[in-house]
Image 1 (cartoon, rainbow, N blue to C red):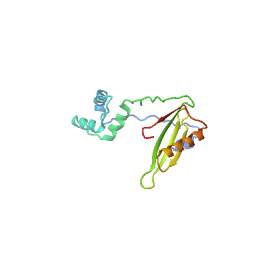
Image 2 (cartoon, rainbow, N blue to C red; image 1 turned 135 degrees about the vertical axis):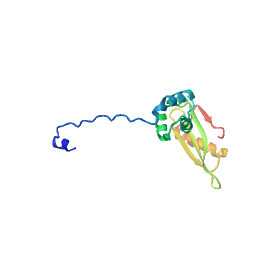
Image 3 (cartoon, rainbow, N blue to C red; image 1 turned 120 degrees about the vertical axis):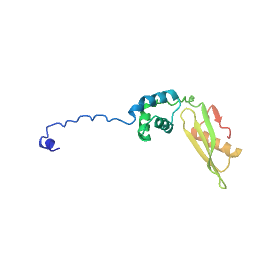
Image 4 (cartoon, one colour; image 1 turned 90 degrees about the horizontal axis):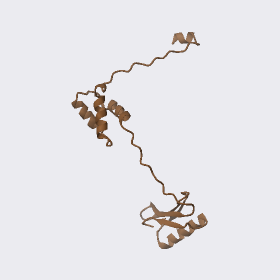
Length: 155
């Protein structure tokens, strides 16, 4: 450090450290084979540790988990296909419980299919009169009516 303080124009020389041998090195080929053989299923590190111990591995599970995280294939999430509608074509309506029991409270939720704009109105019951009133308030809020309304089985 002193030599760099005495010569401020001197650039520090950093060399990468040599890789240290790992207790896992002798078993990496076996681990890779087990991971590919069990794909697409995920082989738990605890099961693999038990197999490695039978083969003479005396290291810990932490280093094994770190190695497995890099070796396991990344599984892509399934593609989500959104149900698209034209503007003004569809609204989806459902009731959702907010509070159960003696002082019951539910919410009438209506979502427009195109914009995903949501309307929420709270009620203490789900009678036909309340449902009709909630629809009127929803239609007033959007300034019209959608061509179709999709109801959940409870609505």
